[in-house]
Amino acid sequence: MAGLDSGFPQIWRIWILAPRTLFLLVSGALTLIETWPGRINLDPAICNRTKIGMGLSSSLLPGHHSLRYFKTTLSGPQSRETHFIAVGYIDDTRFELFNNEAPIPRAEALTSWMEKLDPWILDGETWWFKYLAQVSRDRLNTFRAYHNQSRTGSHNYQWMCGCDVGLDGRFLHGYDDHAYDGEDYISLNEDLHTWTAANKVAEITKRDWEAAGLAEHVRNHLQSGCVRSLLRFLKYGKESLDHADPPKTHVTRHSISDQEATLKCWAQGFYPAEITLTWHRDEEDLTQDTELVETRPGGDGTFQKWAAVVAPSGEEHRYTCHVRHMGLPEPLILRWGK
Image (cartoon, rainbow, N blue to C red; front, side, top):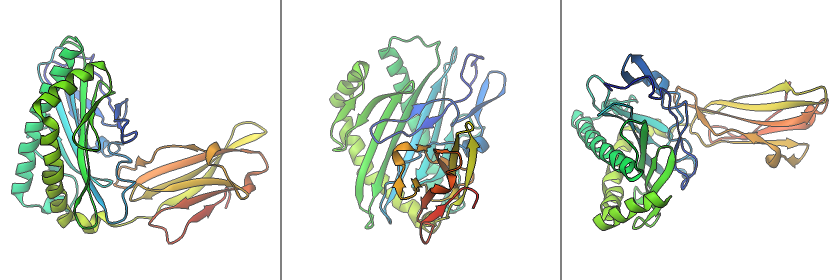
């Protein structure tokens, strides 16, 4: 973006925390690389390592599918333009990218099956993303004004929307959530008729959107347009999306002191993202004493995760890690050193 100076943050991350706890910007995932002075671009190779979209589809039942779009709009000091990035996910697979800072801004296929779509579909996606970029820019400016902020600071607006379908391809759930400057802002409720504002400033937006009848328009899109898009994409990508890669697993030991050590159970290279790692001491479940990280993308379309417990030195043999994943014919039981 022309005019951005060195004060603009170079690294951003979107984390999906929970259905009602929206995605927060913290440094690291959607990575923006300053390739030359005054310009910031998205590096697709680094985007492969992002955690964007994690966890949203992991609760889906077998045969159910989800479509999510995560849109981030960034403004920087002394810039009249905004950087808009959109990433599309089906289930746990990132399949589409739009970056208005690309030399030729257009919808980019990120999977082999997406490349098989008729050209007019990607043209339509490009038009839609460009429209959303304008909407997002206007909303960012509005939210900034509501917060009495000047145009010289760095600000960001995040927007996630999407839908779930069941075995019969019918609509199950819809989502339309918004965050401003890394904090929850406003969300469409599960009834798809009402909004929840996260703070007093967001109450202004809530009144504006209620007066405009925005919930009805969003609901119609989620229940019809979103579902049509998801079913169309599934027609091309279902075989790829329904595959399961089992995890590669191992246990490591890390000394804390002469008396204690950390045992860490690793699972890598698995798909889909849903997985369960639990530690046991003899027959006792140690879930309450386990340090567990969120499932993370591995950069190649698969995922990784670890779980750790502290064990007394000399008693490591009593601890077992139990791994459950749909790619495994039966749960794995692991011990350190075996």
